[in-house]
Image 1 (cartoon, rainbow, N blue to C red):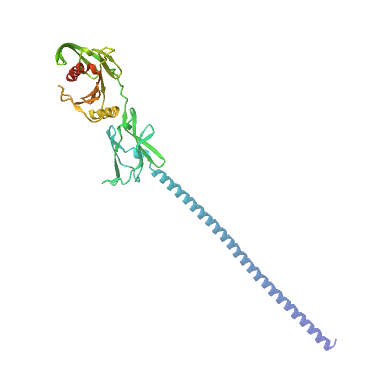
Image 2 (image 1 turned 90 degrees about the horizontal axis):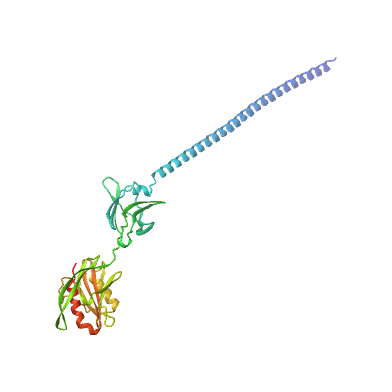
Length: 347
């Protein structure tokens, strides 16, 4: 082999070695790059894992916080609701501390409402119906020394609204609840109806003036029950009939009939009875008192028409009414007998 070929072969081998070295470097660099890339990738994967894990942990923690908060809020709401329910004042709580004074329609209601009560509605009830102060509300309660509020109500119920029997209630309404306390109990008294009756007490001789002449006669003393009123009636009018509310005396003569009727108006004054009679008979006010009669009773005499009129006499809290009627021809003989009757009335 010549020298030139030898040099070429040496150069070719050198290039191959250089190439092999370069390939080895590239491979090393590529391997190094691959390792670095793998390390970076692993780092990224780790960071992503940590981010994901961190996000998961954060989500779990957030959910736990929200759940705990919701649990706490629910518990607080429930506790607040329970407190509110426990602190709700009912009408029964107000009624428990009420005191009642008075009777027969006039009452004083006193009480100390539970804490937090500033007003409540009340009514007076009979058989479930409001009869007085229905729906009124109590405001501005008086503040006491013991830092509590109190109230005082003065109630007045008309006598006509009071029950004959049963309970009169003071009813309290607070929110949706109602409760009552008894103001007064009424018991129906057994009424004993005493029918009107006339009892003859005695018969006494008398002398009366008829048209200016003395005439002997008899006076019969009667007692009107159940009022205990006594009076005298001349024998001329000794016939009588007792009705439900009056007794009528007459002379038992169909041709000349004279009547005198007695009745008692209960629980009414003289003036009230007189006003009723004036309206009933369309009369004027020309009254005459009983000064011309020998009686200590107060009363009036009123003429309604010729031979017709009435007397009103006050007896305790009642009024004795005496109505009379007679024909004109019997007038002179009737008046002395009416005088006998009026002068003899006693109780």
